[in-house]
Image (cartoon, rainbow, N blue to C red; front, side):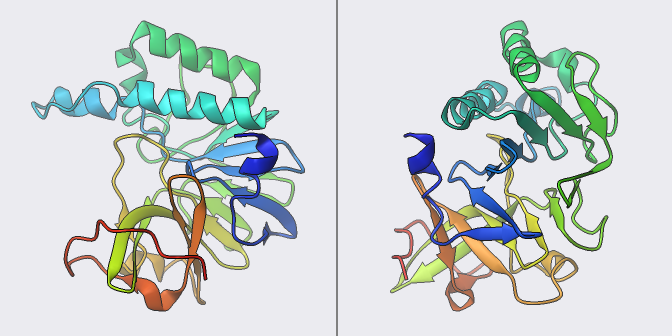
Length: 246
């Protein structure tokens, strides 16, 4: 898919701090004016973290996440990539990375202006990979932080791994999503093995004092979901079709 086609994915133009932003169905955010690609919660080496504790998951999460990120780089050709915290699942994750995976990440970091925002899972700067490191950083009038309550407004954050259950005409689906209002946005987790917190959870009330918008990730596009179509967890297993455009 071409960059121009990819940028037509959202149902309507979205702006933060007066700047256009593009929500990609892969779970990344694109700032076209600044050629900046933003991803959150990559959680590299989550699989190996759990394997050390006897819970064996397929050891391909880092590889899958890198592949998805490389694909977006081919589409958008970003000048800057900003990782919005929790890039590594734990402080030792870098050392567990397969050499081939580490080489791929190193190549990505060197191909752009890479910015690391530190998260609760990775509170220290990476040792093996280049890039600027910040706890929070302000760029182009927007403040980037891992946790959404760290700054009052014009904030892009991650941390909560937002997802939503959307139901229409008796059919529904549970997917990762973007959550936003006029002044802030929470990105979905980009990592392959990351779960999600339902946007109906009280944690989101601490972030958004007014009504928020939900954009659900589909296979090829992003769906804006009205509040009346949202459901909390615990009302059955939703695996059906995505809501129709409306």
